[in-house]
Amino acid sequence: MRAEQGKTVAGGDLAAPAIREAVRTSYPKAYECAHRVKMLLELHLNVDLSADEHTYLTIHVARLAKDSWDEASA
Image (cartoon, rainbow, N blue to C red; front, top):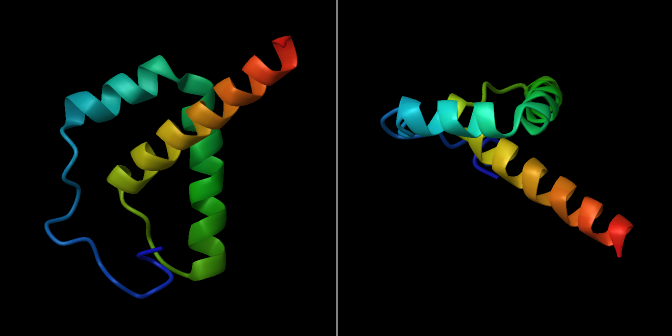
C-alpha cells in the first residue's frame, strides 16, 4: 500500500470528479463503509488518504458486498 510505504500520490487526486460522484451515488452504503475504512487507515498509518483512494476503496467494498450477497442467495 502506498501509504504504508510512505509514498505520495503524484499529481494529487487524478480521478475525474464525475467518476468519483458516480461511484458515490451508485454505491452509497459502500461509500460510507469505505469512508470508515479510510478513517481507520489514516488513524493507524498516520497518513492522509486521497479522494481517489477513497473511491478505490468504495469500488472494492461494493464488490465484496455484492460477492457476499451473491453467496447468501445461493
